[in-house]
Structure formats: structure tokens, C-alpha cells
Amino acid sequence: MMMRLCERPYTGQLLSEKFGIPRAKIHYHLKELEKNGFIEIVYTEEKNGIVQKFYQSVAKGFTPAANLLPHLEILSESSRQIFLQMTEMTKSHILAAPEEAFTLRKVSEDPADWNYVSSCWEFDATPEQFQVWVKKFHELMAELNEITKDADKDPNSKSYYISTTALQIDERAMQRFVKKEEKS
Image 1: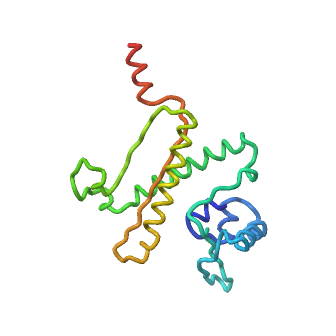
Image 2: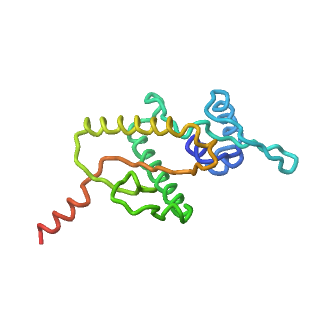
Image 3: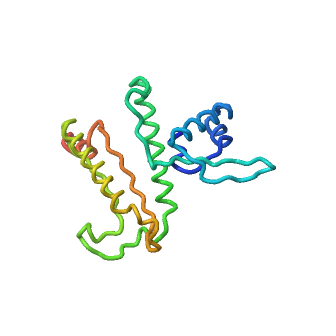
């Protein structure tokens, strides 16, 4: 439910329909999340004499405490589904992005001059090296949040989207190609 509320505002009724959970149960959880400061009512609408409350997360994301997570085998499949949902969201943003998002403003080999970035990287690392990178990545994103904290007040600001997926893979794609070539 929190992932959905990070995306956009929902009413209890909409969440109930989306998850197939009774509305009363959804409303209980919405009240608890609101009481604890995780979500807020962003607007209300009157429909057929009933006031509908639209809730949304107050954060752009969240990380649950490790002791709240289910057994690892359940968590593993949940994580896979979250990765797939995030990939779908990225695809939706790409398809809906304005044409100017894909138009280079300046032809340059210097990444500092580019107005968009799209890249895929494959590499070998120890789990410890990967964790060092993850920590640095999160520090960099915190720095980005600090740099852009008042951007929404600037009439010249634009909305940007960053999608990051980093995980262990079975084999590097280029390695698979090289192995096939060696067998020929």
C-alpha cells in the first residue's frame, strides 16, 4: 500500500478495489499510517454527497525496518515484484516524457553537458565492494535532494526522473556473448 501511495493519491475505496481487501480494513490502516505521519490527506472531493479523502505518502520512498520484513523466501519474491513494478513505472515515464527530454541541447562527449542520461553497466565485484558503492550512491542521492530542495519554487525548474536498479545477475551479457563466440 505504501508503494502505491508514493506514486499518487488514492482513496480508501480505490485501494480496496486495487488490493481486493475490505474497505474497513484499508481505512483502519490508512488512519494508522496518517496518525504516525507516513501519509496525509492531500485533497478531498465530494461525490454523491460523500466526502472522499485522497491520501498520499509524505515521503518519496521508504525503507522498512529489517525486523518488520517477512521470511527471506517471501521477501525475495516481493523484492522481485517491486523491481518489476519500478521498471514498468520507468517505462511509463519514458513513454510519457515530452519530446524535449530526448533532444540533445549540445553535442558533446562530456557528460556534464548532457541533458539526459541512459546507461547500463555490468561489472564484477565482491559483495563488500558492491555495498561500498551502494552507500556512496545513497550519499549522492542525499546530496541531490539537498541541491534541489527549493527547486519546486523556481518557475524555470523541470521535473526529472531517475530510475536505478542494481542487483546481482547470473552472468554478464557480454560474457555470454564471448563464451558463445569461443565455442564456435
